[in-house]
Image 1 (cartoon, rainbow, N blue to C red):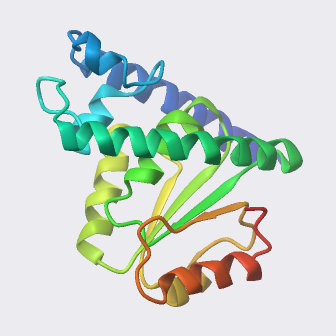
Image 2: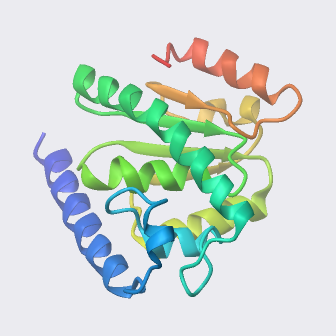
Length: 190
C-alpha cells in the first residue's frame, strides 16, 4: 500500500514541476484574440507543440476552428472523467485511433495534469505517430500518458482491465466498431 502512495506523490511532484517549467517556457505575449480562445491555464507550449498555435503564439483560421471544436468536445468529456474519478478514485481514458493524440494531450492538460491520479492511453496503428506522441508526452512532463502502437483489436491485451471512458475521434473504417466493442467488453462508463 505504501509503494503506490509513494509513486502517486512522486508523480504529482513531477507533474507540478513540469507544469511550472512549461509555464515558464511559454511565451508571455499572447494576443488578446488568442487568449479569448483558450481556457484559463491552457498550456501555450502544448498548443505550439501540436501546431495549433504558431511559434509567436498566433492562431490561423483553420487552427482557430480546430481549437474551438476540440475545446467544445472537452466540455462533454470532462464531466464523464469527473464522474469516474468520484466513483472509484481513479480514472482511465483510452483514445482509439489517436493519430497525433491531440484529444489525449488536451484532455491531459485540462483534466489529468491537475490531479495525482488518472491515465490517458493513446492507441494508434501508425508506430511513427505513437513514437512522436510518447516523445512529446515525455518532453511536456505528462507522466501518466501511455501509447500503444497497434490496432484496436491488437491493443486489447496491452490495455488495462478497468477503463472508464473510451474515445475514438479519428477512428476509421471498422476501428469505430472495434472501439465500441472494446468499451463494451471493458464495461466503460462512457
